[in-house]
Image (cartoon, rainbow, N blue to C red; front, side):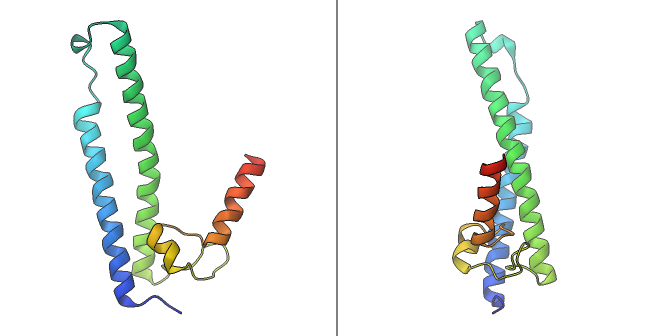
Length: 122
């Protein structure tokens, strides 16, 4: 059962909105968080705290970059007609899973297998 065009349009809209938000977050980080002004920080504790928060923000943005790649792949799959198929087993990904994570490339069974393997070997 292939996805209806209305479902594809809805997922495309959701993915584009997520992408827009991630790009806005990245712009905000570049504009606001890249600068660490030591004149605004009166002591070493404040400086250390600010550096920690800055490092945390950059790590978070790094994770968002990975999500952005997944979103771009999902949008490309919508365009080429392969959206909604598991990359591992080829089965259709459930609507419930796509509603929760439209950028997913694995059905729930294959994702659980992947996570189990990462736990066992990671």
